[in-house]
Length: 211
Image (cartoon, rainbow, N blue to C red; front, top):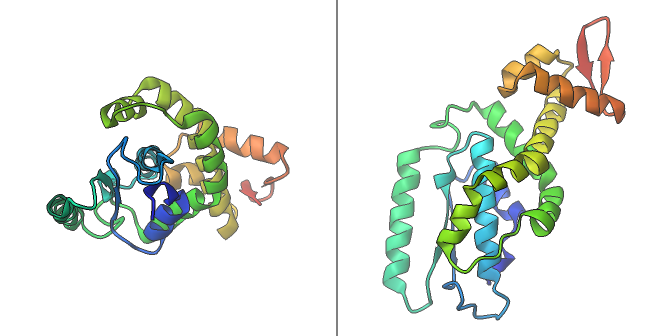
């Protein structure tokens, strides 16, 4: 299968099912067997996914992509062995990151629900076009990408996390802020915007927000 067919849903479904690490092997860049340059798409996808993982508190090293040909069995074996070592050192998903099970599930659920939207902005606003892997990494580490990530994804993820919390029970701004590690001003902004859209309501008697 072409590495270009790997989708965000594949990656985050694996983590949602408790997989501790995901390894993707693709053809060398500029050597696509299918003439679609799908390996460039896979590299974009992995670097974006790593940033999302970092944002929700997961170790980005749990996801790796390596490029090699079908004749480079020794390289494949070394890459997999090194990745397995990295994942073993990281430990079980969420535990070494200090995330309890409920928080981990909440964060992954928020990402999974947002995947159709992330696919859209990735293809229209975030997909980079460079020649080398180092150039891709430089872009995803740049201030420009951080600005786009916050504008296009981070705020939407925060709203998704808030909605997931409110599915369980009504909560105050302070309680949501403490659970998600967001500032109360950011939580208030997201709640006010959601209230204008009719997604949440403020229960005056409880001093809490509810769906």
